[in-house]
Every structure is written in C-alpha cells, then in structure tokens.
Image (cartoon, rainbow, N blue to C red; front, side, top):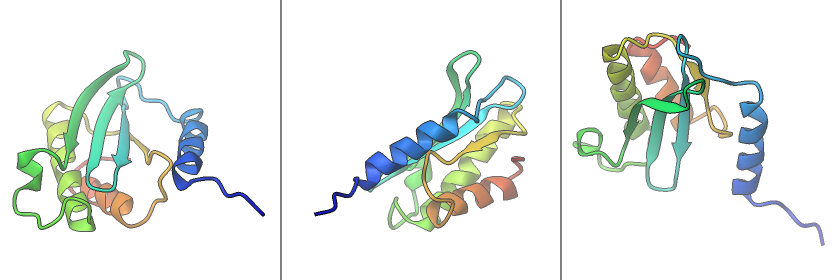
Length: 122
C-alpha cells in the first residue's frame, strides 16, 4: 500500500523551502499569508528585526462585517484591501509576497490581487 503525506505536511515543507529564498527587510518587508479552514490571516513582517509591522485577519470585526462567510474569495478580497490600506498608512508601499506554501489560486490569488489594486507593489 502506498502511503501519502497529509496536505498540511506537504504545505509546511513547501513553505520551509520557500522561506530559504524569501526574506523581508525594512525597505521591503514580507507579506505572509496563512489560511485555515475558517479564517485567513495576513502579516507584514520585517525579518531583519523579527517583528510584525502590520497584521489583519478575518477574525477581526472590521474585516468580517458584511461577509456571509470568512473563508471564501470575497473575504480574501476584503482582507487584501484592509491589509493594503493599513500598510500604506504605515508607509509601506512594496512587499515580498509569501504565499505560505499554499497554491497561488483561489483565496490566495484573490487576496494578492485585492492588495495590488489597493496600492501595494509586489
């Protein structure tokens, strides 16, 4: 019988490989995306200092207001707009996109496109 690795294990391994090439600096921080079954979380991180500069998630009341579900592409689009607005308010214009090992499609792509439309460059 062929054993198959769990999707979560495969994603974690992909993310570990990606992190060898991605790093956020003060000039160009890293925008990290994580999605669970129920919510999405985004952070903009300065890896040189080891701190989070801006964060947003669908758990927050500001983001989840007016949404039917917090785990679909509509929620991802709203979250992308919110994170871009918060980043621009802090003076962050360009970021490195870290998709967290997730496939660049669906919710992750919707979040990235909304953040680009709202003014972030990556």
